[in-house]
Every structure is written in structure tokens, then in C-alpha cells.
Length: 480
Image (cartoon, rainbow, N blue to C red; front, side):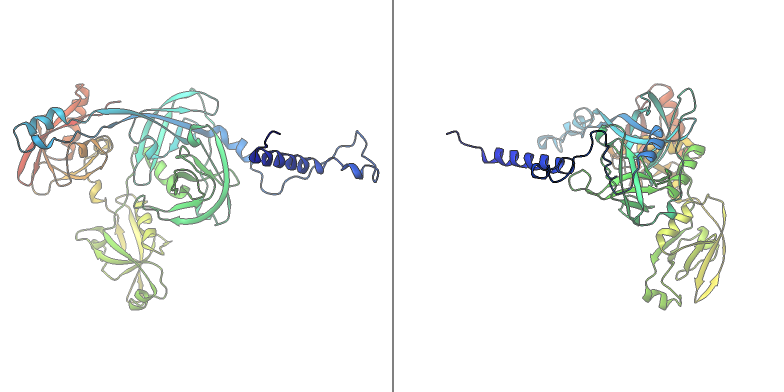
């Protein structure tokens, strides 16, 4: 007698049960056939509509404006480690120069985006296109179009693209994320795992999440399934307005576990408008360090409730110092906008343009004052005049500032994964010469890099001063 596979038997049994459950509602059981009259053959049986929301009309409305973003870029392979037997010998420098140079490796990636202007402007994430050499957009109608990166903002992980489609394109509009409520339905759309246009639904799980992504963290948390490839796609409310830009997930496995994050539309709309107009984001600067106001601190400072941002310190010669702010002041408003915590103050000031006249609401010793302040420019943004320096910050991975101690340009920031970091440059280095020309400030470095690119050079020589010593660094120039 043949043996029966217990697992196969269980599968067959479950299949029979599923068939019985699927047919019971429509077909009378055999012993009931004589107890009731079967319906006439022409009678239609109406099945009840399943309970729950229906997003089919919303998806049909917005899908034409959601796109797939494909990128091709390159990364530098890590430099080979110097063999122990060569360290400290005359051959060490030879190996550094010829044997340890990292070589580029091509990479490809995909993300999502959405069209906000019929002329072809598309919003996506900076981490999707920030290091790309080539960007391509696939429209909902199947067309593949090359895209230009208009501008990027790493601090909010947003980017703006532009395509030429030969005609007006379908668009979606931003909504007001400030009106979102926890528990409200939202729909995420994009290109998960490169599969193509997909829609998922969930609710707003929380607002104002800080996940350590940057200084302006203010994420919408949602359980609408978001996966790799959804980055840069839109998060819609039930009226089809974009209330967020899908940006990150929390996942031990790399896939969706119901914790996704989107940049709120209030912030995204402000950043995208600046990228469209200027190709970069100009942020305001007040010049204070802040701390949270807890009930104990509020009582000590004679503040009626624990809402506001405590001024912990004021930078000399800053806009705050010129406006008379002092440590212990509590800022509770900016231009009529309530400030409940330091994060809100940072966001409100960042949205102001340098030079803007602004009214603060300040509590000092229990008394309310409203000083006027002229917003300044963040110190780490004072690199060079015009957009060229900003471009070098993105492409070379460094930010420059004037050298207050003399000639040259000071390296203010170095991106950990940028070309400058790969060549060993560090914050505090002073660039004295670039491309054979003396550097008087950051603008000279930008001009020298631009001239080297126009001349078709693959690298530029920089003379660097560090702790009294000087050296020449050959910095590769990214093309494309």
C-alpha cells in the first residue's frame, strides 16, 4: 500500500476546505435542496461590497503624474592598504601615488518622483539623484526622458528634476501637511523594488518624528507600506493632494514593517520653490544655541507654560546678538508663528531668507517683548558668491569659507563619502592654490575648478596647508 505524504494530505485537506468555504454562500448544500426552492436561472445574486475605504478613483486621478527615476553613477573603490613591509620605506610614497589610487565603479539605482509643473519639473529625494552622473525619468505613459538635476538639498533630502517632454505634463499639487491628523488615511505611490507604479494605503501614525536624518527632521510617520524604490514618491491625502515625500523606512530587514517616513509638504513646498528659482536653498540664521523648556525650567524662568525655545547661548556679532537677545530668554514666536520647542524655531528661521526683517516673541523674566531682528546667513553657507561654489560642495564633497587669518579658502566641511574625503582632505585645511592660481577666497577655487573642467582635465591640483605643512592634492573632477 503506497504511503501517504502527511504534508501533501494536509495541503489537499486545506484546499478542500477553501473550496467548501468559497462555494457555500452560493450553492445550497445537498440535504437542503428539497427544503427550499432554488432561485431562477435568470436571478442575479448581489454580493455585498467589502467594508473599508476605496482609493481606486484617487489612484486613477494621480497616477499619471507619478514617475520612475533611474540613475547611473559611480563610486570610488577603497584604496588598497599599504603592505606592512613598505611602510616607513622610500617605496611608501610610490605605493600611495600609483598603487593605492581608488578606481571608480559604476552603479545604478532607482527611485520615484512626481510632477508638480506641466513644464516638466519633478520632485524626488536627494539620495536618489545626489551622486548621479545620468538621470532618466519614465513617465506613466511609458516614455523615457533624460532629466536634468535642477538642484538638491541634502539637509532635507529633497531634489528637483526637469524633463523636456515636448508638451504639458499631468501634475499633482501640494496640500497642507499641517492639517494632517494621526489616524487619517494616506496613500503612498511610487516604484517599490523597481516593480513599477504601485499604490499602498495606510494611516498617519505620528507627526513631527525626528529620526536623525538632518537638522530639520519633522517627518510624517505612516504605516502605508513603503519599500526601497519608493524614495521620492508622493504621499497623498484622500483628496489627492501631496502631503509628504516618501523618504525613509525603519526596517531591520530592509523591507516594509509598517514604519515609513515622509518629508511633510509644508517643508517640501518651501524647499522645492527655492530649488526651482535658485537651484539651491538659502536659509536664515539667528545665531543662538537652544535647549528644550521643561516644567522645572519654565518655573525658574517665570514662564507660564513649558512651551518655547530657551536661548542657551548667543553667538557674538550674530543677528540675535545685534537684536539684544540674552541667555535665558525664551522665544515663543516668529512673525506670529507659535514656537513650542527648539525644533520649531530652527525650522521657522530656516524658512526665512537672509536679510529678512523678522519679529520675535520673547519672554524675559516673565515679561513679553517683541524685538526686531535682521536674519543672517549661516556661517557654513558663506562659501563663495553665486551657484558655482554650491555645485562644488555637491560634486567635490567639500564646503569652503573665507580664511579670516589670511589668504586662501578654508575647508569648512568635507562630505564623508565625497571625492575630497577620499583624497584625505579635512575640515580646517586651507587651499592656497588651485589649478596653479593663487586662491584669495572660495570663489577662486570655484573658478579654477570650472576652468579645469572646460579645459577637459580629469583632475585639478590643489595646494593644501595643514598645521604648518603644505602638500599638493590631485582632486578628480566629476563629469556629466
